[in-house]
Length: 273
Image 1 (cartoon, rainbow, N blue to C red):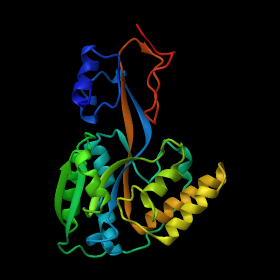
Image 2 (image 1 turned 180 degrees about the vertical axis):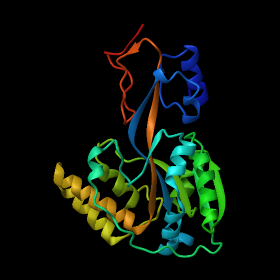
Image 3 (image 1 turned 90 degrees about the horizontal axis):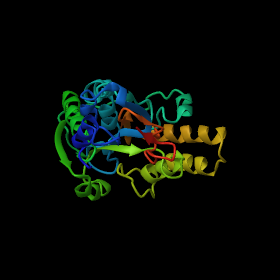
């Protein structure tokens, strides 16, 4: 069932026993006892094009960062069912809360009517609304914003080629490896295969290489947080919020899996009366 509203309706009418990824807008229409909120290793991030266009200027990247009110997104678009981001990694990785304080490295520059193109996709229900709110916030800061919204299949190639000044992405920060380094290398290294920000920074690459060669454990976690700080210091990515997956279980369902990675729902321990 690709439509989120239809999924929620299936739970409400008893057509479905277990429903994955209920849209925030539908949660209030359901019995609260049937919904579970699970923090996800997924961050809603604004990627800024560092290679060309307005955000090649670090001062304008800092101005965009200063303009964004993440709390307004959490309370408004997500109706409180998300967490304001302190970094790329969120509460699904509890050790990420031990990140050191990171002072601002670049002062915001004046936008002065600078024209930018802000893009996102429709496949995750909340993103178009996030884009509309961000447009307002950036315009209040002095940017002139053109908004582009398409299905993901029709926008991914343009995003990876750097066709937009800014791109809103709901991004899994822990991939199949279970380790954030793979995601960081993919998105922020010079040779990254998913580098929407078009970022190539020697300090970032050095930090990622250090994290990649550090054995698993506390030292690797510290190296990952150091790499996160190096990425954020470039201003190429502005983490806004950490999503929670809303899972619906009909009354009488027991033993369904509340998996933050959205890999498991049903096991041999799952039953429905």
